[in-house]
Length: 531
Image 1 (cartoon, rainbow, N blue to C red):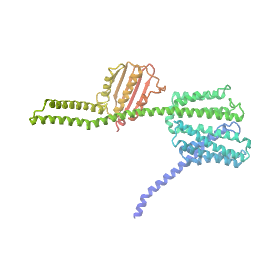
Image 2 (cartoon, one colour):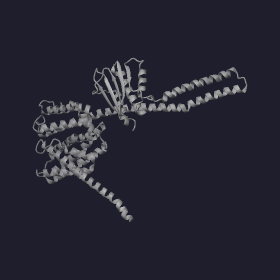
Image 3 (cartoon, one colour):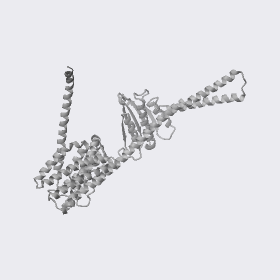
């Protein structure tokens, strides 16, 4: 009976595990087939854009395979094998020797698997192309991986009599640059967009993003269809993408420029087409490689500077928080040590005075004066110490956000600069001290920016408590600024955004030149107070 009971308990768990295993197998099969379809589709696309019956300028399937195995794991290699087998089976009917095709397939498989392994070793598992070191590691990994395929493929074709010894160098170079250029288009694009596709899309789904894509398409088309030496006129648009849209925009711009160049040349148009077939292929490959290397390196350097600036802002903010904590610690230590010692000194002095008075002896005038002086000095020091402890340990928003900002604005009243007007409810806001402190510091930072940069006559701070949120608005009538323009060296806005993130608040900055600036912070009450 006990065994039957145990079996009845285990049976549902066994069925559940079996269903989970079956579901995992189904997902794996679907994933393998999806990778095979993607690899085969890009292979057919590359073949449709051949410069001749046998020469493709780039081979993007190599990049598809490397990116897939790097991002999702080496266990997906059967998808590449299936697609490679189909592609080579089609080539078998074209007269290529079976041994050469087998060698080519082995080389391509080694390229894809090796590329994923090289990427993991050189740049780690999580690469966002936001560091110059990462970009360099990706280039080296792709160069090594594609060299494997080019070498194995060249040897296979030489052994099968497809090429002779005099063609080896040119054949290897064309093969390697084709795979390398194809990988430079696909792999960085996949890595940049896989990291955070929603953020990448939001960054490009703007009027400026649309204008960038149009500019890349138009300039790329003009660059490769014009007989004049303007081949690299697309580079300003690529630089624009690198500066303003980061790795996601840079990789997309490179892919568009490469696609236009290949498509135009494959249709017998442009300056590349007018060259001999070997030079035509080489020119296209170098054009793509130079565009990718330049754009991605520039994007990484710009992104690296942005990250460094944010890290500096975060460090300065945390330094301020640590300073507050240290002040409070000093206040506690002073209270527990020096303040208590002063109290004891005063107590002992009073005791000595009483003892002398009760003994009936006549103390000298100098001793009496000394004791009185010690008592008064100790009392004064104790009073000053209490004031210092209070100042060091006090919470800036102990009386509430509105009261703290009113006090801050009153302190600014004696200085030259704009008048600061505070408007808010008298009752305490439904926020924790931490949330109020961060809103207070954001507001102080915004007011400081008005004082330093706005050239305003007035600044208004409005605090409103709504049903489920608190809204703080800081507005001025100053000169304003272009919020879309980069502001190197100005870390105040980054500090404000960082503090807002800590309390799940949303901060928006609206400004136009000569029309003032509005900083609006919306803090959700429930999340901001820790509920």
